[in-house]
Length: 126
Image (cartoon, rainbow, N blue to C red; front, side, top):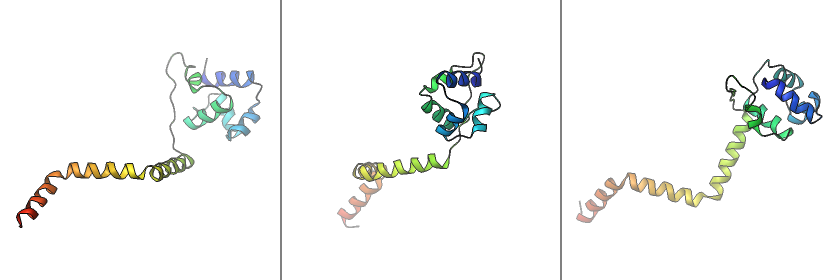
C-alpha cells in the first residue's frame, strides 16, 4: 500500500475530513490532497504534525513502502530554527557555570605547554 493510501485510511478511520486535518495541522488542504494522491512526498515537518493530530507514531507512516524504504524530505523551517535558538539560549542561561568550566578546562588542557613555559619564565625572572 502506498503512503497516500495509508494516510487516507488512517484519517478516515478516525473520522477526519481532509479539511479538518488541514485546519488542525496548519497544512493547506491542497497539501493534504497532494500527499494522499502521492503527488508529493511529505516533509518531515508535515509527517510530524500529521502524526500528532492523528495520534499515530511516525513509524506507522514509514512502514508503508514494501518495495523500497520511504524517503524523507528534510527541510529546516525558520520556526524550527527559532525554537532551536530559544532552546540553546535557555540551556546557556541555566547552565552557564558548567559551560564556562568546560570551556576553561579545554582551554587549559590545550594551552598547557604555553602556560607552563610562561610560568617557568616568570619564576626564573626572564
